Amino acid sequence: MKCITKSWPAVIPLGFVLGLLLAFSGFAAKGFSDGPVGFTGAFIQGGLVIGKTKPGSEVYFEGNRIQISDDGLFVFGFSRDAGDTAELKISLPDGKILVETLIVSAQDYHIERIEGLPPATVNIPPEQLQRQRHERGMVASARAVQSDLLEWRFEFILPAEGRISGVYGSQRILNGEPRSPHYGLDVAAPIHTPVIAPLGGIITLAEPDFLLEGGIIIIDHGFGVSSTVFHLQSVDVIVGKSVQKGEKIGTIGATGRASGPHVDWRVNWGKVRLDPGLLVGLQ
Ligand SMILES: [Zn+2]
Image 1 (cartoon, protein in one colour):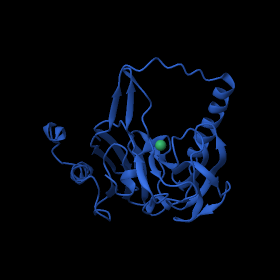
Image 2 (cartoon, rainbow, N blue to C red):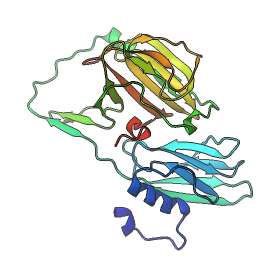
Image 3 (cartoon, rainbow, N blue to C red):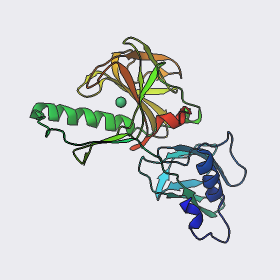
Image 4 (cartoon, rainbow, N blue to C red):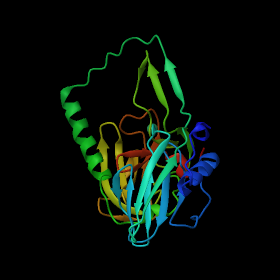
């Protein structure tokens, strides 16, 4: 544990201890600890953490002010390659400032090196590039939605029943060139298998035919937390519809650039890509 070799402050902040404990367990126990700030969640790369502090506080994660609910709840997450600490600053209603240094554990991602491949000969036509850019923009706008929904307080469920065929963070290095990591959790099942909402929310994107993703749906769970599911055969919801956790929203397909029928499920906190597997206890 490299964090132990660091010099300990005279008074160890609560978050530090909690982070350390959670780093060991990977997951938080249910419920918040007492004190001016408590956490529940995974202090690990790709992890999502829910915090609770005094209502009316201002919360800053890595220097950026983040949303807080009327009852003092807030949410943040760590990226795939997050460093080993993160700073959380809370300005309490009485004027006191708390600074928590959170310890973030590293994940061990599956990296596959493939050498000796013939050089890639893929030439993407300019009109496809333009379409891709446009569709990426639509996805980014949907994920940028910052609503007051509080669905992120509840536990996620898998978007489909099936075999886990791909995990978050994995990466291929082809001829020494790292490809973009895989950020989704893939669930493989036959075409037409129902795809359900992993959590409640509002549909912010519902498109039947994106170039790479095929049929795609994005659900806003509030406070910047969203789910994206794609390669869908059918998209059975429209933008603006409110969905319950577990409600059918589409079906599994192999649309877009998919090697076989599966649903690729991604979870974001704004632009930060989280590990869906952690959220459903796969690890
Ligand atoms: Zn995938």
